[in-house]
Image 1 (cartoon, rainbow, N blue to C red):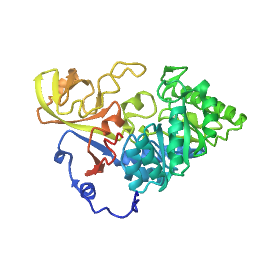
Image 2 (image 1 turned 180 degrees about the vertical axis):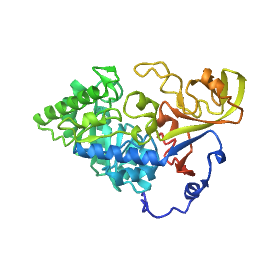
Image 3 (image 1 turned 60 degrees about the horizontal axis):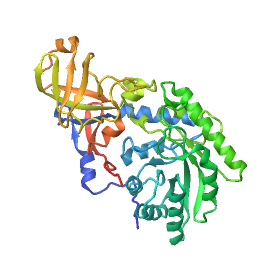
Image 4 (image 1 turned 120 degrees about the vertical axis):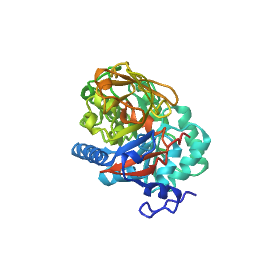
Length: 392
C-alpha cells in the first residue's frame, strides 16, 4: 500500500542532500547542466495562475515539463487544483511527495498499470484517461475484480491524430462507458496544441478558441443524450488562455509555461526573457574560425523539435544567449556543433568558455537530466528530477 508522507517534512535521503548542495558561482558548475532561473519560474507560475483564475476555470498543469514534486506543490499553492501526468509511475512519484489530486491523461490498457492505478486511487483523488471500448472494458474488468470504481475521462481526437476517440465516434463510446458499473465518466479532454483547422499554426488565439468550442459543443451533445459531463478539459501552454475563454470549458492543462522555451517564444506566448531554463555548456574545441564544439549533444538537448520545420521554422537546436549570430546547427551524442557568424567570430570564443543555450523544447530536455541547478540570484542548488525517466 502506498504511503504518502507529509511533503513539508524533510526526507532523510540522498535526494534531500542533493537539494541542499549549493554552488556559489556559475564557474563552479560542471557542464553540461540544466539551469533553472527560479525567479523567472516563480513569475511564470504566478502569471499563468492569475490569468486562468480570471477566466474562472480550473488550472491543472502538466508535470511533463519539470517532473519535480516540489515545483508541483508550488503550482498548487499558486492556485492549481491538481496535476496532470502521462504515466502511472509519474503519478506514483508525485503522490509519494504529497500531491493528492492527479489526472493520468493517457489511456491505460495493460493489467499491471491498471492495478497500480487502482492502488493509487485508494490513496488520492485520481482520474485516468480512456479512448477506446477495449480500454474501457479492461478498466471495468479489473476495477470490478477489486470492487472499486475508477473515475475516467474520455479523450477526444480534435485533429492532432494521436490518442483519442474520433470526434464523431465519441457519443457512442461515452454511452458504452456510462453502462459500466465500475467506471464513472466525469468528463472529456483533448490535447491539440497549436492546430487550426487541422494544420499547424502560429495563430494560437484562433487555435485555442477552436479547440475550446469543439469540446464544449461535444459536451453539450453528450448531455443532450443524458450523459452527465462535468469536466471539459483542454489546453496546452500556447492555447490555454484562449481555450479557457470559451464558455463551458472547465479546466486547462498547460505544462511548458513553468519554464517556457524557444518554441513558446516563437509562438508568441512569451519572450526569450521569460525562459527560465537554459543549458550551460563548455567550448571544448575550436576547429576553425566559424566553428565551435561544445560538450552538449543529443544526450543533453532534445531533438524532437527539428530546425526548419513548420510552423516554427526555428534555426538550430537552441538560442545561444551570448552570441547573436551563432547557431547550434548539429548534434551528435556528446558534441554540439555551433556555427559562428561574423559577430560571434569577433567575440574570440576560446576553449573553456561557457555558453548558455535556451533549448527549442524544454520538456524533453529536462527528461535527459538527472538533476537541475536551481538558480536564485547567484546561488545554484542541485535539485533531483525525481520523475525523470518514469516511462511506465
